[in-house]
Length: 589
Image 1: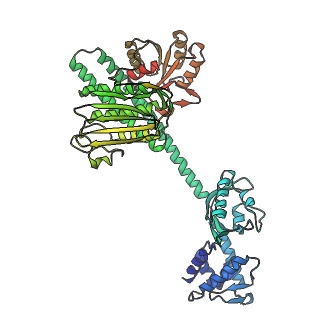
Image 2: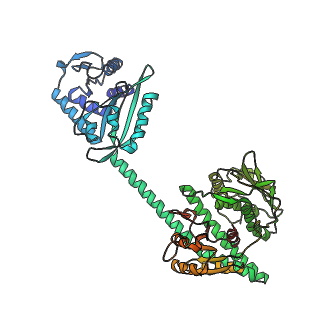
């Protein structure tokens, strides 16, 4: 259709024809005189030869401005100028214009022209109606327009207008307008910046009312956020419900292992503990991947004793290595920082994952943990090297993808979700570091993490065979508070076996009463109690003068996202089930 081609040409030079060829077609059939602002354009469907002449005339009309070019003329497709007296169907033309205005109102669309040189914005009556203005004006300044924009969106709209002036960018923005009666409406504005001689001259475009669409989007976003909240609540609840009973299972397994003599009995209990730990690893990996994906996993930095943390990982992983008759060697190359600022839980998780994988895929030989400090880079570097099955070149490219394990006869039958390394890579990145590896099929693998650190003090460290730095253990008075009596009794029993004096309480009120008479050195609290939350109980315990400096440890089935609460904070935060050795080390920190 000729009118569609003409509309396209006019759009190219900056005219906004909101209703396109359909509007031209309908109007031209009525009176052969469709209107375009103040110019009258006649469309001849069978003759396109005059398009170029018409475009020249239209540009001239636009450059002179609406008030200077004779409105008593009309432009034919041939480019000829005719007298207004020859125009037919004036009543039909007026009717068509009214219908167009009604159509624009119904579509929530208004047009505008911003003259950058004079800082004058002219817009049609439709835009006055959309902006809720009761006193229409023929023109406004940019500041007057911006005064209508919602304060929260004003800076962004101003910045986009500035880019139109300075860089010649087109205008494109979603923003809110406040009506005089206080109602808020959403608009989408789009305009083309016209440039002449390298300078932006004016912006012409349209605004659309998108309030209904935006309301639907906001409702959908809120529904998604509500689904995320429910999912997070469900995962947190499931974590708590699974971890609490597993705490008592594993604690009693440790108690039995400390007392049993028969080799078969010991092996049975080890299998129970191994299965429990595997279940917890699966739960932890799934929860962590979900948190990372939704951006809910947070880094909690604190001052950490680096040798203590690394020795702790070695000591705990050495038990698994001995089950496979593998030596787990810890070696410090030169001096390392005595303390660093990092997330204790996440750095320990990274090292656990790497050492656990090394042990899992090594049948014979050895596994080494090598720690070094790089003073020139102010970075910590830890390597975990094994003599295991290695990784094929085909699988190396997929290694850090979720749910991927090396697929070979040697790895079949190995437990795991394939999430460990994917999570490890994410955690290393969140701590500001990087991870790399080298591997040879059937020749072993070396995984290396490097992360920047701030190190207040340097200590000399050498080869370690699992001797904890905090060898001198003192006995403590510990108040253990948990509404799960099985957990309370199991953890209490383990602490008593280690020589500590333990008092237990199953709710907040009895814990307060017992705290006054027991004078604990350490309080170990669950976050969820029948009569009050763990943070509320901690706040009340801190108000007791005799317990003001008592060490506090959270021991909970909930995750790290519950670590902080309204300014109240535990000295240490442990997720159930806490290994007895980890808990012992925290008593000394």
